[in-house]
Image 1 (cartoon, one colour):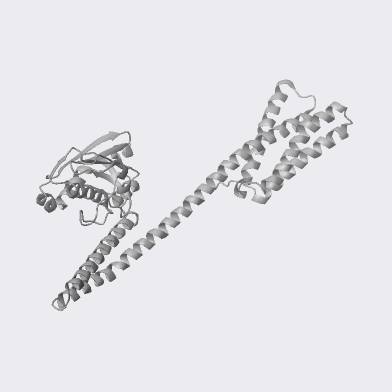
Image 2: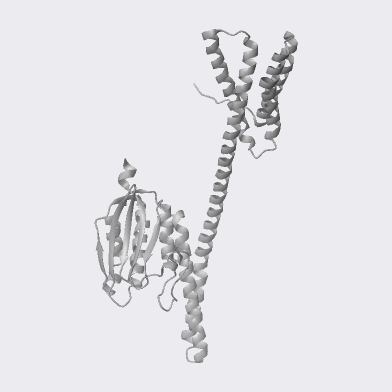
Length: 372
């Protein structure tokens, strides 16, 4: 059998509060008149029934002018009815235990008090739910905005590849065919133009790579980091041999993640360690540690190091600490690595001193914890 949750319409919720408040106000005035009561009963009904009725009626009017969203009005009424229900249950237990001298008066007083208590709790709950709804909407808007920006970045970087390739190709063609007719100054200008076009192509290629992290990521699964590092180093074998790099690797854990993207992170970090190794052959260590449900993986080199004030900048897109003439590259490798790690729910940071090597550590969710 299907189950249905009953909720009042938004406008009906306010009307219910106004009606309930009016009912208590009418009871506070009408009950003493109906029984020709003494002044004490008049005062009791005015304070304990009439005032709650006034609060409810005013609250129903105030809701539409408050910051509370109309979607949660029905919750306020539900809390009021809950307060009435609690008081009716208490009244029933009292009647069974000791009896009641005036059941109607006691019922009106207790339910009025219960409804106001429920109203106060309902307002508190409604404000919290309003904040939740607004936060959800903000998150949705940010997500939609990020998706549009990603689509734009992907489309722009993808579509710019071919025009930039053509510019570079034709500039080189002009340089070759008119080599004998060009002055030294013109040749120098053409070299600058070709170099600029190539750098822009490299930046666009990096932007395309950055935009693909979310768009083309694979579902997470249990991944053996030992295999990931082995594959990454195998792909870089020629560069490692040419630079006489020595890589020492600890036994690494299994994590939850995208193996292809994690291999990309390792390649970026090892490539940077080789690039900034200084004059000596690169010495790289890949180690691990466990920190609760997360695994820490560190890539340590003995290279030129990074000043402490620059350690946050290295993860920004196209942020470079050196000129392209000193160290070639697009300046996006660490930004891509950071985005991949954040997609996995982890964090990445640098520990380094100028001239004393660099350790880049990132965290990933343990596969053992995820399987439990």
